[in-house]
Image (cartoon, rainbow, N blue to C red; front, top):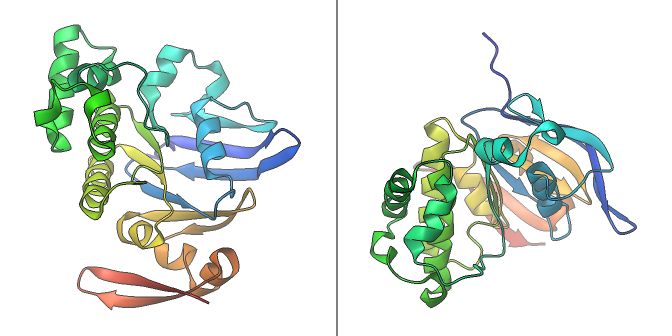
Length: 253
């Protein structure tokens, strides 16, 4: 039996003002994949993620979630199909962390939502923050709470825009280990990352974008080949064999 891609993007183009920021992008992401979306600043990564969420309207093309056209999905069905972790980690109200995370499980009864929220906080090693107001947390603590909110939703597709930005190394590893585990359990994760070494280490597949277009799509050793690293990022890169598999090393040209 053929598995339906969880996410299908077909010939998608979109503009911001008079500038085209995503140009004729087509790709599919299957259940259980952890896909890293990489590229220089301005490559179109955030715009593509926001178009998949329905936050930006495409000029052309379409997005399918679980086989259904995005434009046909109401807010409830869209929220069940995907969970979005934006790059901006602000929260408007100083709610207790547990209540913020419970918003991710909004389709459950209140007691069920709080139970799932507590489990998600424990999953990201932030259970002790449950009763603290999110405005009183450090940036790293708040990042864990917002990740927990996404995990509490249990949507089939997780879209994370720079989920490790601003985190210390331990926090970065925790975030990527948790989303990697969710992908291994059958969810699908698409995460934009600037750290190419982390993308190489954790992603099943890397999609490299440049100037709004996909210029490479495949396993990390292919999508981050020396030629791609040189032409897209202006870096010299080598793949070395490490204890746990290939390791990417980088330096400036």
